Amino acid sequence: MSTFTKVFVVLLSLFSIFLCGTVVTYVSNVNNYKALFEDEKSLNRSLKSENTSLKRQYNEKVALMKEQEKKLNERIQQFEDENSKLVVDLRKAERMSLEYQGRVNSWAGILTSFEQTIANLEQSLKLTQQQLNKAHSEGIKDRKELNEITASFYEKMVQMESLEAARRRLLEQKTDLENRMNQITGPDTWGTQAIEPVTPDIDLARPGVTFGGADLNGLITEVGESMVTISIGSADGVKKGMVFHVTRGDDFISDILITDVDTNKSAGVLDLVQQQPRIMDNVSTRL
Amino acid sequence: MSPGKKIIAPSNLYTAVLALATGVVLATAVFVAFKCFADYGTIFKIVEAAR
Image (tube, rainbow over the protein chains, first blue to last red):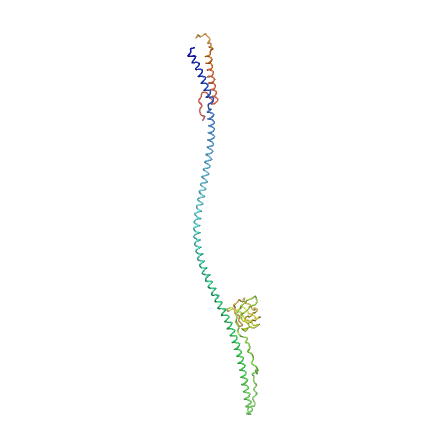
């Protein structure tokens, strides 16, 4: 064997061993790409299936979301319609509110004028009441004077009657005296009867008779359950037991039987009540 | 070499070295074949991706 061959053998052996060493090292450390591939493939399959399910879920969610969006849009549209209606109603209510406010203001003005009118009427009523009271008191005074004048008139009448009776009696006495004189002076005085005075002798002048038919007029001042008070009393000629007739306009109300008499007022019980008497009703002894 | 004669292997260092190298190569080939078969299931085919 030549030297070159020997060297070649040795080198070949060494490089072969070296090569085998590196090959073994490489082969033992190399990745198992098939296993990796299978792993990756299975992972890919699982991911694909997961992706498919996720896509399906996504599509479902998208469909659900679209449906909800559609419903929400419908609700939004409904709410917008309601909102527009409510805005219209609000405008209408505001307009009516302004209108009613104007009416309220006008009514307030009218009410104020009415209050003013009522105040004026109350004032005029007070004045009228004062005038009425004044006229009533004057009327009472006038009636009192009238009663006094009537009483004095009747006294005068009685005096006149008494004087008339005295005159008649004097005439009769005169006639009687003439007849006696005729009897004394002449025979043709027989047959005549003695004239006796018919008029009774009045010795003393009688006091004036209170004429029972004198009209007394007054007003009711107080009204109780069964008793009333009138505005005239003993100064006007009222006496216990007198009957006053209560009238209101042309209507008969009731009778009052006087039970208590004061100077300027009297009280009595009601009788023949047709209606409940009121203050300021007229009372009179003659209907 | 005559046809009737037996081949006698020379026993010397270079033979041993060659034998060693041959053994190493053979072991390497076996190892690689085994590894390929274990990993890929085939030795001579190019593994294709399973569809």
